[in-house]
Amino acid sequence: MTGAARRRRLRGAIVGYGFIGAQGHVPAYLGRDDVEIVAAADVCEARRALVRARLPGAAVYPSAEALLSAEAGRLDFVDVATPPCDHAAIARRALEAGVHVLCEKPLATRAADARDLLERAVRARRVLFPVHNYKHAPVAKAIAEVIRSGRIGPVRSVTVDTFRTTHGRGVPEWNPDWRRQVRWAGGGIAMDHGSHALYLIFEWMDGWPTAITAKMTNSEPSRWDTEDTLSAVLTFPSGLARVHLTWIAGVRKVIYTVHGARGAITVDDDELQVSTGPTAVGAGAPPPQVERRTIASDWMDASHTRWFGSLFDGFLAAIDSGEYAGRDAQDACRCIEVIEAAAVSAGDGCRERRVGAPAARAHLAGDAPRTSGALSASWRSAARAAGRPPARRPRRRSRARRR
Ligand SMILES: NC(=O)c1ccc[n+]([C@@H]2O[C@H](COP(=O)([O-])OP(=O)(O)OC[C@H]3O[C@@H](n4cnc5c(N)ncnc54)[C@H](O)[C@@H]3O)[C@@H](O)[C@H]2O)c1
Image (cartoon, rainbow, N blue to C red; front, side, top):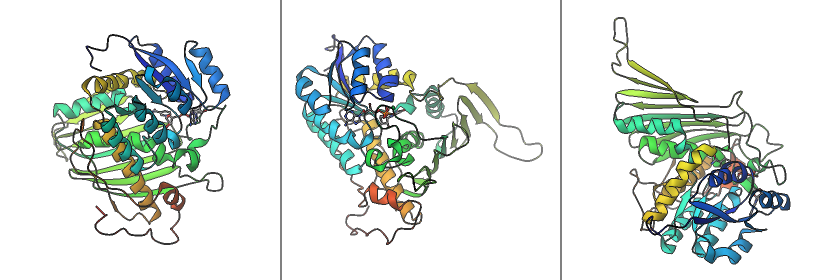
């Protein structure tokens, strides 16, 4: 459907009315006049009761399957906001039903599923669009703008530090600690927060990585079967990027640095600093020019409702232009490949893993992706191995299959 043809409001359904559904997505939908949520599904009766109260006009179902069977012909899109383990299956079913898909991160918990979804979206001529909402944080938009302006020159190195004092808790009516359970989450902080760090890095480095080395730790292995901390270094054609994500920090905070040939950007939550000009050091050396800005970005509000509007505009633009598996979807796929590779590296004493992505990101609106880069180890086994040496080295694949 084109923008000109889209005179009526888009009819959407939400699957998973938990924290992000209720606090992030639905408030954003209710504030728009170009979309209405006409149906919702949740496996938890208490959550279904809440959605009925909030959206009295919406049809409410106990599963995505029931919703799609009953509503498919009447829907434009489905918003998948369940825990990650079900993202791929729900998105696949929605594409089969001929419905565009907006999917929370991670797009899937296995790279093979993510690649399959991209191919299906192109074949079905329906948009697959991940919720890469950190790109829409005002301070992240400011970083992208400075890079685009050329002020700091070509970017050669990026660091992303995300500090959290605990894992994010889901709604109490269902399973608030699913993020620490591989069965639901598919992994720990790497699977939960890794996508945000990685797609920001892809954007700032303007490429995909070719290799990764990673370390993961789980400070409470008797309670949880997922890691709470990831440290990783990624190799890009233009330089290195480093990621540190943790749920056991002493403070909630993001710190980003982006270093170019002629300057640097540093971000500490809402505080952005751009340094340009002379880089010489020593007595008498002229100081760099430093611009400081405070850019309110609502970092402390985990629902990030304010970022959702601009993200949803991107989804609508993809629908209007027929960009079925565009850059965001490709980035989502790369994120999962890199997260899988990180788990394998961490389980193998930080040994570097190649990631099978081409260096340059390409638009793929109407073509199926041709790159693979699959890794043989599943997250489950890799995550179990995280933090302790594996009993034996993961089986090496044949040279032909390695990239
Ligand atoms: N982009 C962001 O900034 C952001 C922030 C928070 C959460 N998220 C993502 O949103 C998703 C949900 O996270 P949350 O914090 O809202 O979790 P949550 O536990 O609060 O909510 C999950 C909801 O899904 C329901 N559910 C579970 N399995 C289901 C299924 N198969 N079908 C239908 N409903 C099902 C549960 O009953 C619950 O109501 C996750 O993928 C998470 O990573 C993203």
